[in-house]
Length: 119
Image (cartoon, rainbow, N blue to C red; front, side, top):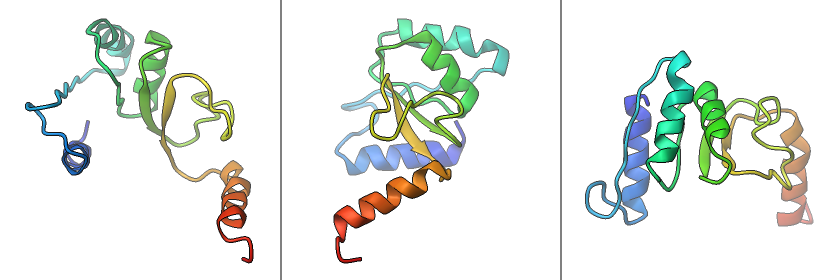
C-alpha cells in the first residue's frame, strides 16, 4: 500500500477515534501479482475483521478468498470487475470507492433530484 494511502488510512482512523496499536491493529502485506491468492488466503485465515486491498488484482484475490469478510476496494469500474452487481444492490461482501463511470451519471442525477427537488 503506497505511503500516501497508509497516511490517509491512519488519519481517517484517528478522526474516528481509533489509534493503531491501542484500540485497532492494522497489518500490511506486500505481494507480487502471482502471490496474491496465497496472501489473500493467509489474511482470511488470520481472522481479521476487514480487508482493504490495494488495487484491482488484490481485490480480486481477496474476493476469491472470502465471501464473508468485508472488503473495502478502490477500483476503476466495479461492474467490469464484478465487485458490484448494481448501485442499488451491490450484493456480496465488497464495498468501497470507484472513479466515475458513465453508469453513475444517472444515479447521481437521481440523488440530486431527491436532495434538491426544485433543482
